[in-house]
Image (cartoon, rainbow, N blue to C red; front, side, top):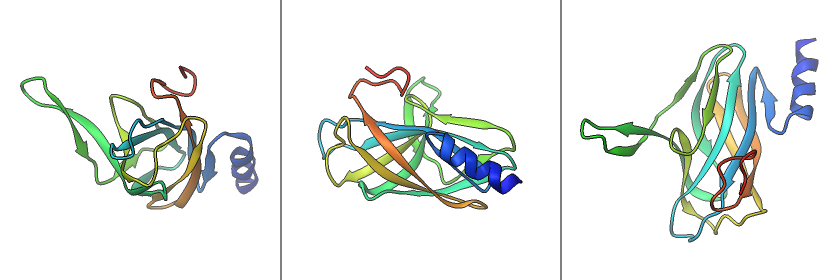
Length: 146
Protein backbone atom coordinates (compact mmCIF):
# COMPACT_ATOMS: atom_id res chain seq x y z
CA UNK A 1 0.00 0.00 0.00
CA UNK A 2 2.89 2.37 0.79
CA UNK A 3 4.31 1.88 -2.74
CA UNK A 4 0.96 2.85 -4.25
CA UNK A 5 0.81 5.98 -2.06
CA UNK A 6 4.32 7.02 -3.12
CA UNK A 7 3.47 6.47 -6.79
CA UNK A 8 0.30 8.53 -6.37
CA UNK A 9 2.27 11.38 -4.75
CA UNK A 10 4.83 11.30 -7.56
CA UNK A 11 2.06 11.74 -10.12
CA UNK A 12 0.11 14.33 -8.15
CA UNK A 13 2.90 16.66 -6.98
CA UNK A 14 4.90 19.08 -9.14
CA UNK A 15 8.04 17.39 -7.82
CA UNK A 16 8.88 13.74 -7.50
CA UNK A 17 8.55 11.18 -4.71
CA UNK A 18 10.85 8.18 -4.41
CA UNK A 19 11.72 5.92 -1.51
CA UNK A 20 10.31 8.29 1.11
CA UNK A 21 11.88 11.48 -0.30
CA UNK A 22 9.57 14.12 -1.73
CA UNK A 23 10.94 16.96 -3.87
CA UNK A 24 8.57 19.86 -4.47
CA UNK A 25 8.61 23.41 -5.87
CA UNK A 26 11.82 23.20 -7.94
CA UNK A 27 12.74 26.42 -9.73
CA UNK A 28 15.66 28.53 -10.93
CA UNK A 29 16.13 32.17 -11.84
CA UNK A 30 16.89 33.15 -15.42
CA UNK A 31 20.57 34.01 -15.84
CA UNK A 32 21.84 37.19 -17.45
CA UNK A 33 25.14 35.80 -18.73
CA UNK A 34 26.28 32.25 -19.47
CA UNK A 35 29.61 33.13 -17.80
CA UNK A 36 27.90 33.67 -14.41
CA UNK A 37 26.76 30.78 -12.22
CA UNK A 38 23.09 29.93 -11.93
CA UNK A 39 21.14 28.78 -8.90
CA UNK A 40 18.29 26.35 -8.36
CA UNK A 41 15.95 26.02 -5.41
CA UNK A 42 13.51 23.37 -4.15
CA UNK A 43 11.94 21.82 -1.07
CA UNK A 44 12.87 18.38 0.30
CA UNK A 45 10.95 16.19 2.73
CA UNK A 46 11.91 12.69 3.87
CA UNK A 47 9.48 10.49 5.81
CA UNK A 48 12.21 8.23 7.16
CA UNK A 49 15.28 10.47 6.99
CA UNK A 50 17.91 10.48 4.27
CA UNK A 51 20.94 12.40 3.08
CA UNK A 52 21.42 14.41 -0.12
CA UNK A 53 24.94 13.51 -1.24
CA UNK A 54 25.24 14.77 -4.84
CA UNK A 55 23.56 16.89 -7.49
CA UNK A 56 24.07 16.92 -11.25
CA UNK A 57 22.50 18.46 -14.33
CA UNK A 58 23.33 18.64 -18.03
CA UNK A 59 22.64 22.39 -17.75
CA UNK A 60 26.00 22.96 -15.98
CA UNK A 61 29.46 21.46 -15.64
CA UNK A 62 29.05 21.26 -11.86
CA UNK A 63 26.12 21.48 -9.47
CA UNK A 64 26.89 21.96 -5.78
CA UNK A 65 24.94 22.45 -2.59
CA UNK A 66 25.79 25.83 -1.06
CA UNK A 67 24.87 27.49 2.19
CA UNK A 68 25.42 30.98 3.52
CA UNK A 69 27.77 31.61 6.43
CA UNK A 70 28.16 34.92 8.26
CA UNK A 71 31.54 35.73 9.80
CA UNK A 72 32.24 37.69 13.01
CA UNK A 73 32.26 40.96 11.03
CA UNK A 74 28.74 40.30 9.72
CA UNK A 75 29.92 39.51 6.18
CA UNK A 76 27.98 36.70 4.51
CA UNK A 77 29.68 34.27 2.15
CA UNK A 78 28.61 31.19 0.28
CA UNK A 79 30.10 27.91 1.48
CA UNK A 80 30.06 24.48 -0.17
CA UNK A 81 28.09 21.86 1.78
CA UNK A 82 29.25 18.26 1.24
CA UNK A 83 25.91 16.64 2.15
CA UNK A 84 22.52 17.63 3.54
CA UNK A 85 20.99 15.46 6.26
CA UNK A 86 17.19 15.19 6.19
CA UNK A 87 15.64 14.23 9.51
CA UNK A 88 12.48 12.10 9.44
CA UNK A 89 9.47 14.30 8.70
CA UNK A 90 11.59 17.45 8.39
CA UNK A 91 11.04 19.80 5.46
CA UNK A 92 14.10 21.65 4.16
CA UNK A 93 13.62 24.53 1.73
CA UNK A 94 16.46 25.75 -0.44
CA UNK A 95 15.74 29.42 -1.18
CA UNK A 96 17.46 32.66 -2.20
CA UNK A 97 19.66 34.04 0.59
CA UNK A 98 20.09 30.60 2.16
CA UNK A 99 20.89 27.09 1.02
CA UNK A 100 20.74 26.67 -2.75
CA UNK A 101 22.06 24.56 -5.59
CA UNK A 102 24.86 26.45 -7.34
CA UNK A 103 25.19 25.70 -11.05
CA UNK A 104 28.75 26.35 -12.22
CA UNK A 105 29.84 26.39 -15.86
CA UNK A 106 26.42 26.80 -17.44
CA UNK A 107 26.04 25.11 -20.83
CA UNK A 108 23.78 27.99 -21.92
CA UNK A 109 21.93 30.88 -20.34
CA UNK A 110 18.99 29.85 -18.19
CA UNK A 111 16.13 31.35 -20.21
CA UNK A 112 12.84 32.34 -18.58
CA UNK A 113 10.11 29.90 -19.58
CA UNK A 114 12.55 27.04 -20.24
CA UNK A 115 13.31 24.14 -17.90
CA UNK A 116 16.17 21.72 -17.29
CA UNK A 117 16.60 18.33 -15.61
CA UNK A 118 18.24 18.06 -12.20
CA UNK A 119 19.29 14.77 -10.63
CA UNK A 120 19.54 14.56 -6.85
CA UNK A 121 21.39 11.59 -5.36
CA UNK A 122 20.30 10.49 -1.90
CA UNK A 123 22.09 8.01 0.32
CA UNK A 124 19.01 5.77 0.69
CA UNK A 125 16.55 6.88 -2.00
CA UNK A 126 19.13 6.82 -4.79
CA UNK A 127 18.70 9.18 -7.74
CA UNK A 128 15.64 11.38 -7.98
CA UNK A 129 15.18 13.41 -11.18
CA UNK A 130 13.17 16.63 -11.27
CA UNK A 131 12.35 19.11 -14.01
CA UNK A 132 13.34 22.64 -12.95
CA UNK A 133 11.33 25.50 -14.51
CA UNK A 134 13.25 28.74 -15.08
CA UNK A 135 11.45 31.82 -13.76
CA UNK A 136 12.27 35.50 -14.31
CA UNK A 137 15.54 37.14 -13.26
CA UNK A 138 13.89 38.83 -10.26
CA UNK A 139 11.67 35.89 -9.22
CA UNK A 140 11.50 35.06 -5.53
CA UNK A 141 9.95 31.62 -6.00
CA UNK A 142 7.11 29.86 -7.76
CA UNK A 143 4.45 31.72 -5.76
CA UNK A 144 6.31 35.05 -5.82
CA UNK A 145 7.23 34.98 -9.49
CA UNK A 146 7.81 38.46 -10.91
